[in-house]
Length: 164
Image 1 (spheres, helix red, strand yellow):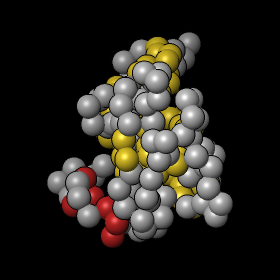
Image 2 (cartoon, rainbow, N blue to C red):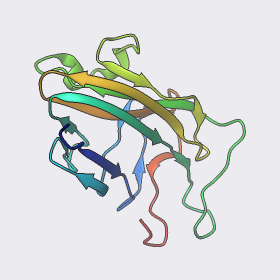
Image 3 (cartoon, rainbow, N blue to C red):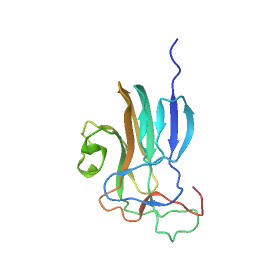
Image 4 (spheres, rainbow, N blue to C red):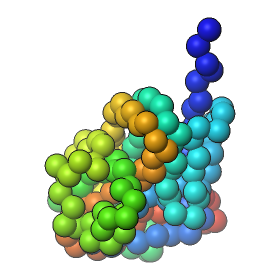
């Protein structure tokens, strides 16, 4: 009889607004929507997801929004033309520069990049990704998003009227 499958669904809510910076921005999950088992752990302070050895089917999305702060309640801005971008899933490689700063120089063809999301804009359109990943040792992965070289008024998180 096969062992039961572990799964986890993590979400990034907006306990505060968070402006994007140029280059890759790490998504930092804030909540667990569903979970079974202990094979998948999430550090809510860093956004690092740790996977026990095994095979994984991973899907995700990332979206960003324009906001100026002067929008009507419960809205964000839509811009045209809009800044383009996408998300990517990356494995952290212990003891290397890829684990920390300098991500702008890390090309998508680098072996630590597990999946690249679909193209999107900063108009709340999600960048979608899906992949399979197998590891023989514990692995640490992160979800990142970029939206152009100058993401003015583009936010990873928007807190409006105290609604996460």
